[in-house]
Image (cartoon, rainbow, N blue to C red; front, top):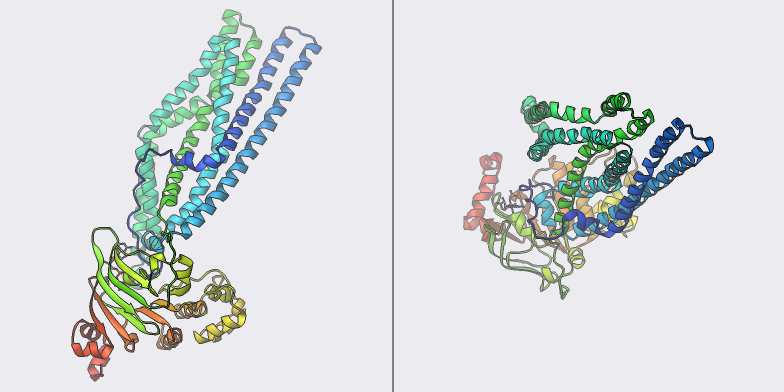
Length: 598
Ligand SMILES: Nc1ncnc2c1ncn2[C@@H]1O[C@H](COP(=O)(O)OP(=O)(O)OP(=O)(O)O)[C@@H](O)[C@H]1O
């Protein structure tokens, strides 16, 4: 069985079909919607209150030019101060409320994701890789944070304040007020032109970024292979092509929209708005005899009327990103979990039996068909067969990485689907080929098999797995943290995972034999460790090298998802069938030259 990330996954699933359900964003925000609405309301009040000091100052200017007494001015000063303070308090409260609501939402969402991901069939990670989990738990939850804690309030503020500002300006002079709307209207028109076809461009933008990251991963993962074949340059060719492609696309997009997007930003800049209003105001003052003080509110509030254009544009992108994140999160949260049995059954013993087992990944082509297999307690069964014959898939059905499409897999007489997951995993362990080590101490890495194990038990298992001496040579022995400058070799990591399995002491074990060991010494140590592991257990080994399973109690040959032969090594060789052919194919030239025995 390959480790969860070892198999390249298929294309990402298409977006969930429209089921008429409420949009994902609204559904996800539901638990904190009330508080977010309150925060938005407070922000609107803050934005409106924030306009009041400007209005008060305009009135002050008016009264001063009318020669009003100082006593008549103080109430306006007080109003400006009070409104400013009130706006500050409301704005701060809105920000705090939105952040607290978002914090609760993030916590609840991450807990929900963790619970849900923990109940997904392990096979899902084999198929899709683990990238989607990182994307959901980190990137997508962060996108929602930006949306709920920041964008929402920004948008409310820039949409509310101009309404009051404009309403007041209309009461002062309708002609200048209309003029104050012109930059906004022009900005919207130009922005729309710059954004025409943006949905397609954004999709291409996302695809181009995706191509860069895929090429970067491939570049990093394959660099050793390319270099070892003297093709250092080829290693980054695709990456370079992807980045060049992105640069071309992006510069083309920028060139096409440069004029209209720059013009959209330019017409709403305060300098342009002020210039326009000042010129028009000067005409009205000189020709129409409008009192000069009436210009003051336009100079103070005019730029605020056009301001939303500058803010809403970038926020649209954040809203889109938040919506896309919500769709992905909802899709992940809706992914079917491993069904837990309605009437749980506990196994009686550890005999594994597969009857008429078929399995299909895509629901169309069977990769296993009609497999019958028995794993007798205390015996070793080896699965062999050509690459792609279904060995990993068959083994993965026992720990329920997937559930059978037809037939049954039973453990101790109970269908594995009727055994509660914790009970199943207590009885069925697996040692994967690609060992995953945690960034934790060696002892804790081994203890993953049984968290309450004592130090003595950990050491006993490490000894049995031939790892103890190597651990003692590490800087802090069993307390050495792996990954922080200390790494184990492939063979050592393999032995650590065997120690883990020994400690977990599951009576049934699925073992994916590593395809390559570093050296004969390491191989001998691993084989010894495996013998310790096999003792008294029911073992199902996915064998890649036949030399290691000669002594297995039963060898099962799989071809195209069917069992074509089974028996002991000598019997199968004597039968001269498929196993004999595989055995001959795997013998080294030296064996052949020396005519070594089978
Ligand atoms: N996650 C998956 N989605 C779709 N098809 C898959 C998936 N995993 C395996 N397959 C297909 O199922 C078939 C059996 O694959 P499997 O890995 O079980 O074979 P195997 O005998 O273990 O091969 P190998 O010896 O190369 O590891 C292959 O055709 C493979 O392409």
